[in-house]
Length: 288
Image 1 (spheres, rainbow, N blue to C red):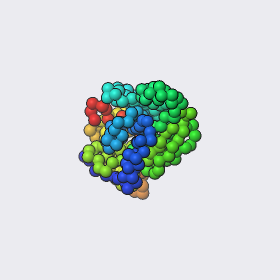
Image 2 (tube, one colour):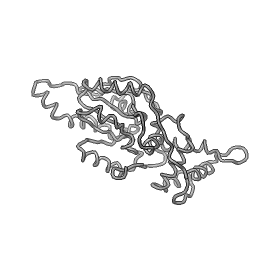
Image 3 (spheres, one colour):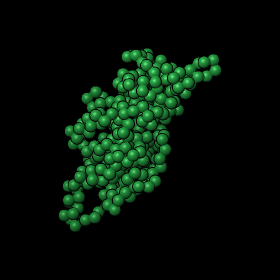
Image 4 (cartoon, helix red, strand yellow):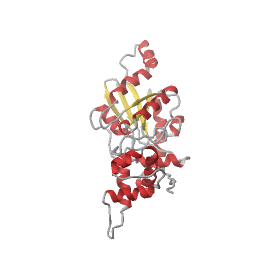
């Protein structure tokens, strides 16, 4: 049986980012937290809850076009019940991004009314943008700014310093580096973060990781695997066996006819992260 790998990662710059967030909070009116719509719970840094206490917050469910649509709606309802505004976005297509500024102004309605009562009209709203690595934070900011302001790469740990980005006449964003946390208490959380690329691949066993992902997808969305890789799978089938089938179906063979499972694993992870496997969500509000 393919087991859940134990994954830990906490580069030094992430400790620095936590200090930077705390020091920068007095400069902003609200905090926008970007999460991956496929794993909205696992992609939320639990430390942020304490770090940004007292600041109005908006949750951005990014990469929503790669997530199960009904699951996205369930997550939006879940956040709303907690009094948190959540909006689904997809930075590749721009879907939902135009709802961000109105949502910010709605969340800050009382604060803005107080400023207006004091004659402080036209005051610029400052919003800190936070999120773990690889949730599309820089792409989101660039979409809003309508130009390349933030550095974008499909790997974690690219934004290393904070920067201000003006997105309209009255709204500026403070882009913070992506920050994970010192220890994943739940191995499943670390695993899900590795699936989406929030954790660098060079610290994980890609074959074990892809095998686990295939086993989970085979349980939750079996049609996704058969449609993408033109293979048949059985209920409860071991992930490594499914990985071998993927490699064979894609003609990933080495000398002697052996299946190149390492190459197959890289393909599966890349295609999942790029949304090529279809719309899937790996966790739901009531199931964790």
